[in-house]
Image (tube, rainbow, N blue to C red; front, side, top):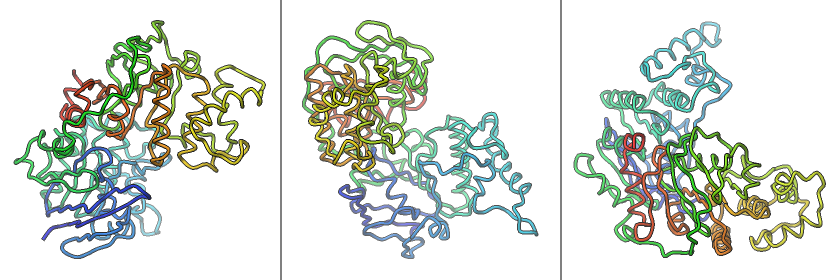
Length: 504
């Protein structure tokens, strides 16, 4: 009898099929890795197991008993806990308060016993030893901690709860080697107690270091399950891609000129370390690899959002120091974020103001010439098929896809020569995606050059002329011509180990 089993699990989000008959089984005292490419359905399956998402169809059992969790609390009551990729910590609260949120120890008077809570948190933290880093203590405020320290607190928040099954969804993504080693020690301790772990990671070295069995998912379905000792990394990558797609190369979409409009040499910023490349006129250069490997940091560094540590950038042969976004705009560069809520539209302002703000900022205009601006915007609005009732309507009246078109239209109105696209199609419908692809093709034909980061691997390979693959902040491969296929992308992204990428 399995400690947990998921059978024929199906889940749709609107027109998107997230899971299509997925199967998974976890034994008592087992560490079972769940792997697959971006968007394959592994996180959705685990959220269903943990009660955060409801399945449309299928059966879930715990110790042979059929269950249906209405919420994470119901799952926790049956001993199932999950570490989510999206951290749930409260920045204004302390480490101890976050770890024991909702389960605070109380004294005889019914009030929270802060001394006991801090002492319990200190014991948990002590297990990480020197790997904690400076400043991580029970009374520290979460908002003052680094990304890796916040991740450790979230892990301890899960481990502090009584559970028989623990799901770790990319729990080691922000951790260094020493911190990962401690987490693995904790997982082995769970195993020794007969408790079970589902471990999601894109790092093959981590998967083979900790897992007893490995399950591969592709396109919402389970492809294969094998004992870690009986399979290889190449076999797993091939399973993620599929034999029919292993060597399928996308036809070329554009004919870029030989002229280099942007050159980057030895650039380090944020997660990036020693990145060099050139972008040609009329080319779409894709930025691929696993999520969070420095692709967004590259675009934001070029646009002056995050500071450079070192490196040389040249636009059109002239050196450029991106100190702030306005400077980048004046060198004919534009940036579009996939997070339109945070970095895109001004939610409480009219559509017209959202469309013209970039032009006004670049030109330092103090007077709004509506007629002139309207004439400038009209061709872009029409080409993007942007639909709205009135320019004075609030931008929040538009669909997510049309809001993204507003962001793109306002930047294209500045007539950029270089367009930086940071996952621009995330969360928008297929029709809007097709419109954006067609418009990108038109821009390339006009000589505009595009740097594109996409979390959709198939999209990236289909749209880009070349793809730079990132791992641990470094560019580890360039895919062009016949090498521009899923197998080559996945091999570069998954088989380049953390240490190789960090010290290459």
